Image 1 (cartoon, rainbow, N blue to C red):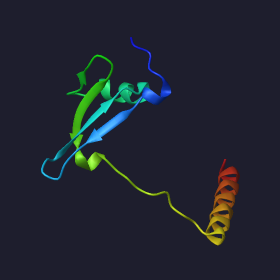
Image 2 (cartoon, rainbow, N blue to C red; image 1 turned 60 degrees about the vertical axis):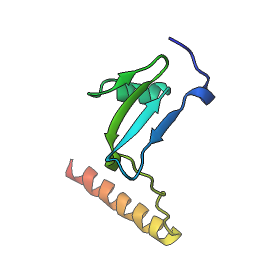
Image 3 (cartoon, helix red, strand yellow; image 1 turned 180 degrees about the vertical axis):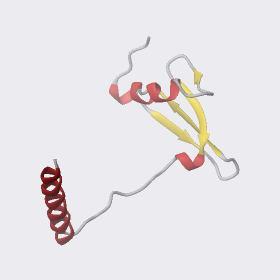
Length: 88
């Protein structure tokens, strides 16, 4: 097997508005492990490719919480953990 540098271990996703599927090609070992066991995957000399529904491709921003919201979430988690310990 060809050893690629971290910079060369890439994943390329290609899709257009006309088709319902996206093509995913990867030389990244992590993505290869995910792709190679999927039905319809194709092996190439140094990578794997698969066609997947475009709905599987997601690009989202991380949620941004205010400090007040973060404090409230911490308090709720603390209470839930305390209740869970009590029920054991």
